[in-house]
Image 1 (cartoon, protein in one colour):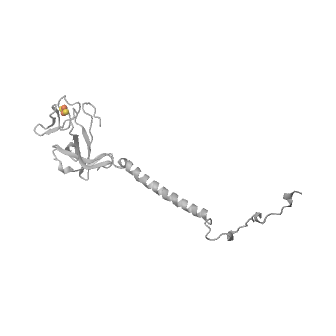
Image 2 (cartoon, helix red, strand yellow; image 1 turned 90 degrees about the vertical axis):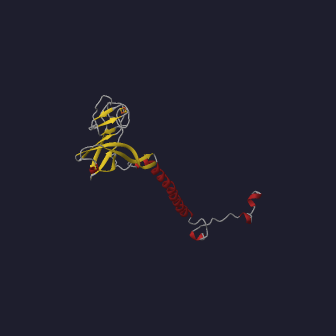
Image 3 (spheres, helix red, strand yellow; image 1 turned 45 degrees about the horizontal axis):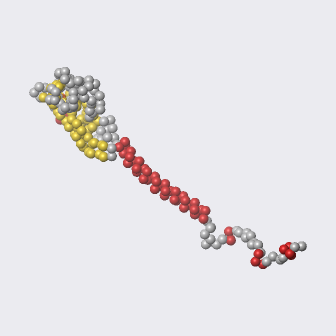
Length: 206
Ligand code: FES
């Protein structure tokens, strides 16, 4: 038998006794008690706050950038018509043209300039309807006048002339005056203002 086999174990080398723990082993102050549950709640709260912090600015930013697309484009009803401040009875019953400055809210990307002049129209009352023309000459874009004495429309730039129905009276303009859509609702005139390409025989919106 070797010297090592006869040696008695040293008291300091007594192996530790495995603790058999139940919940009684832990005190209330043991920081390990309940840690997983607290961590879960804390993580959920952090996730909720993080989601709010991320979603709210993202939503606001998205609405900001989509703002131009969400607008309906001024005072109209979404179909391009603008409500004028003219009532039908303001137009002469005999069909004499009245020049009207068209105003609308101008929207340039994220900027809006309310109630700005965007063009002009000649308006004629035909019974309970309105006949409207753009004042832009279809030749090269000058401003068409009404000549009361001549009973016509006239462009001084290159002497295009039109009758009161907008038909050319000479060969200078490439087409008739450009009509604009107009309607009357509850006595008030609504107008769809558009511009068209000049110097062409076709009426092409631009
Ligand atoms: S622009 Fe009107 S006639 Fe030329």
